[in-house]
Length: 366
Ligand SMILES: *Cc1c(COP(=O)(O)O)cnc(C)c1O
Image (cartoon, rainbow, N blue to C red; front, side, top):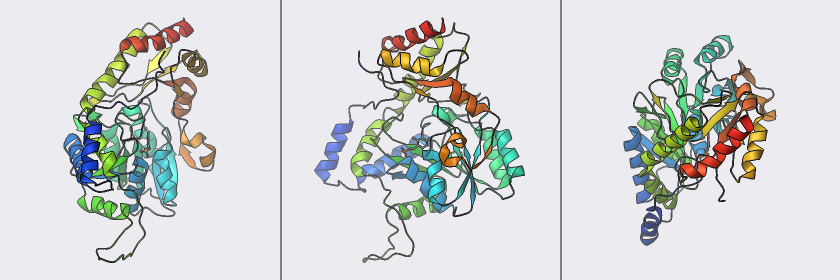
């Protein structure tokens, strides 16, 4: 039995031809035609005006905080139910993360966001909002709160490329948005990220900082410090080929979800991550919770049929690293972490491949 991975790379078949073009041009560098093409394809797909291809989404989040002027001592609000990549940039800037719990959407609770803003004795500068597992958060409410309170909104859309709310793409609602092309995301360049915004100055500043902050001189002149965060032209070639199949990948991810949901519909103790009204998620990973069966029991049983599964993200406020951090909780993410798992959601799979996951869950829940 071939291993069923959570979300393995799924090439379109054009990648190697594009990489060959890179080799023929000899632009084996973090600049070149494919970096531009990749940025263009993200702009046209998501409807955003400016895009910057980077070595990772984490780099994108870091640059976002830097261009917004977030620095030591500033408070940055963030989803607690997320992956650490969403938070590390706050630490890089010496800023202080304050964590906000989820609600029934599994994503950030607008109620707790309001509460945090009222109860904190310093005004938060920014919010990093994760669209978890490719499902869009309550974005209209969250945008309204951030506007009213004058807080920058950075969307961590690392998992949600191709997901939309009211036909607008995730990552384009806030001041800045970030997508990831890590090996396990819906599209991959083996590693990479993209920073997007409507604000041209921010993206230009981020580009400057991402290439060692070199001033415009023939010699090397520096007034501030930068990073080496730009994406390589070789990897951008993979990205261009991957963008051509994004719609197909989203469609198949959604079919995988629908298959699991239909096959497991009889089991009362199971709940899947919801999809909000007007939103269209990419269902990057099918995720569900169990009321009675121990998640680790399911994970171990799936391992026996060579299927990869994992617990849901462990909330940031439960991480030893953040034991001293402030958090606004209601119990949601802790419960999800206790009860939930991610199922193998490969786009290359057939429904037949997925049935061995279904069989295991049916057996354990009967
Ligand atoms: C994957 C991921 C990141 C990090 O992306 P990289 O491209 O690996 O830096 C950040 N946030 C979330 C929510 C992610 O899932």
